[in-house]
Length: 116
Image 1 (cartoon, rainbow, N blue to C red):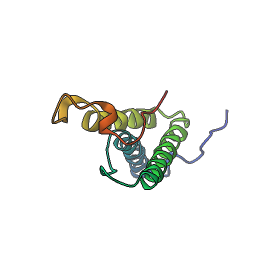
Image 2: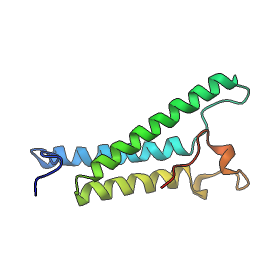
Image 3: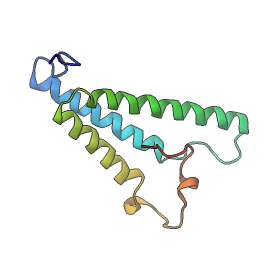
């Protein structure tokens, strides 16, 4: 069977390690965009809608890049992506670092959650 992504692991351990860090950061950023409110209250509705659309498109693009990396069928890449999503959720989506428990999800994010 031929590799889907030939040369993914690079020529050295160092390049492979940096690839894993890159996948981790991409998945972490997907969670950051999924759980963060960037648009200020009182922003023009058209501007807010355009910003939401841009943020949504960016999040989807990053998520697809992570998916393509996982399709390399490399266990290290899979673990790096799951780790990035998990750490991102811990920091931005869980109650561990939330200031108030009564904040609803809809109020804490500008874009809808990712659907699996």
